[in-house]
Image (cartoon, rainbow, N blue to C red; front, side, top):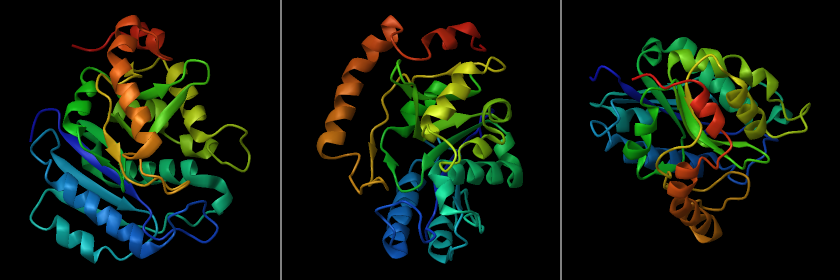
Length: 256
């Protein structure tokens, strides 16, 4: 284990509650996608990832996941975390899951936690994780006019979680907000001055997997084209500081 251990936190809802907004509602299909992802990331242990924590919030049977985890530094947990009205939305549920994990798994307080939506595959994850160096929070915030935090993948230390994310799920209820959770969280990151942050990754994450809102795969079609364009322009955007959090990143010097 390194002095700065990296834990991959895979968030999951194997069996969505009735009424939850998703185009992928079948529990068996979701389980298969989560199992594929866990097997995929298991191969990255020792290559930028030190351990994996898979957390499901639908109190589902974890036997198949435990079989994939056996003999590896992988922990699997499931709890009844979706006992809230579906109208609260996915942002509320995901941040509540993250806080549950942070409060119940002691080793998440050591090093860096990298959160990935559990059904998605980030093929260049070890390279993207390098953005954690010297900061307590790192993530992609797109769109300077309407900042939007990419919730598919972001990372934090204990200090970063406490300063930016703790209890934040309480403000992400879709039934009372006019803005989506990605915009609410981006504002929180940009306004925080307590910890050093990185608001634009050095490397564009290569993400594939079906998104819940419409079932489209991030790695195919128009979504894949958007990623290719973003990857091609990222070096220029970084060099010119033409991104939403550029001023914020410079405001608090990164630790060396």
